[in-house]
Image (tube, rainbow, N blue to C red; front, side, top):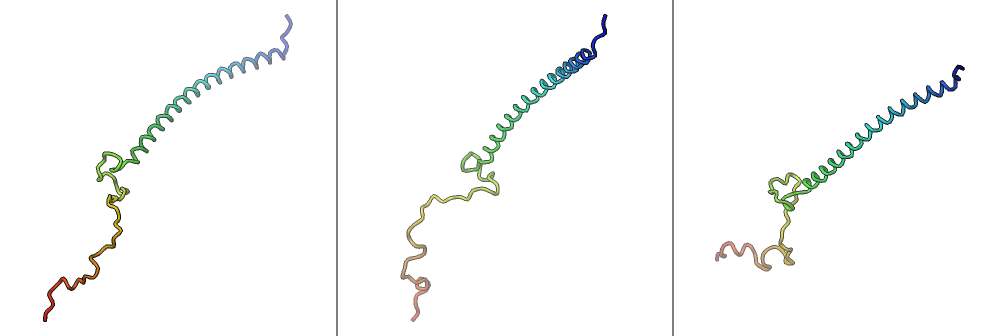
Length: 106
C-alpha cells in the first residue's frame, strides 16, 4: 500500500482542528446567547424600576395623598387662592393716625 501523501495528512489534521474549534465556538456562542437574554431581562426590570422611582420622586402633598410634612426641604411654596386687588394697601385717604388717639386739649 502506498504511503499517504503529506499534504493529505496535513489536510486531515487541519480539518480535525477546525472541527474541534467549531464545536468550542458553538458552545461559547450558546453560553453567550443565554447570558445576553438574561441581561436583556435585567435591563427591562431596571427600566421598570427607574420609571416607578421617578414617579415616586415627582410626588408631593399637592399631587398625591402624602401629608405636607413628608414633602421634605424642597417642598413647593403654598399659593394663595385669592386674586390680587386693584386697590392700594393701607387705610382711607385723608385720615390722620394721630387724630384717632386722644381728643385735643384746650
